[in-house]
Length: 270
View 1 (cartoon, rainbow, N blue to C red):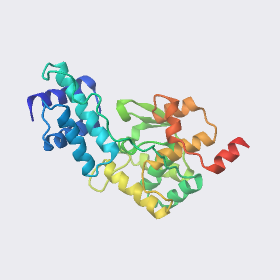
View 2 (view 1 turned 90 degrees about the vertical axis):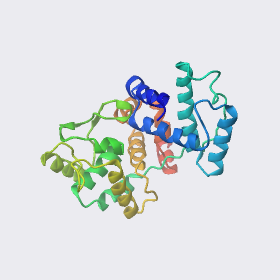
View 3 (view 1 turned 90 degrees about the horizontal axis):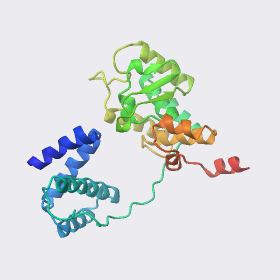
């Protein structure tokens, strides 16, 4: 790696304290930038050419935007340490417009159908935690047996490094499965056949398989988080409480995650 790259990685990790995913996103983005002829001294024309190549190769608007943003931040750092003369070549560059985000949420009947597909305690508890409490897959994989405290589940390794406390709320079948897993002991609640901690990819495959078996119109594991948020909104739960439970900084994110059907709207406004 170039000397400046290593310094920047140290800066991201030890000064900015960004997540591991953010670091990886930069490393991948910089690799693609270099493969297209980009360097630490690239100019506006080089940036425009890179974006054109990504568009030609069929990269999604979201992917292009992420890569451009990651490399743009690196050039801000190069300017900061006097390793680049002039303005950031990414300033003012337009990227493809990202289509409006469309969340997919399951109805309560569909959530129960997914739970019915789960045959093991691991799958039942995982479905309960994700589809009724809204935890992310990475957070589920990091759960320890000591994180279950009476009626509260403690998320110690949430997104962005923030911890939070989430009320335990799930169907009895899932809750009983969770209790049995905790009673087994060990460090982590969810394990794999090869390790005492399941990986996010392993958990994703499990949830996607259950969604496919239930035939509910999606195999995206993140639909679990949308489903939990939507149900809380339909039940008229306190928005501040939902925001804290889901680890958001603003209740405004409910507008992105909560999905109400036409029937829900009719019932709410009748």
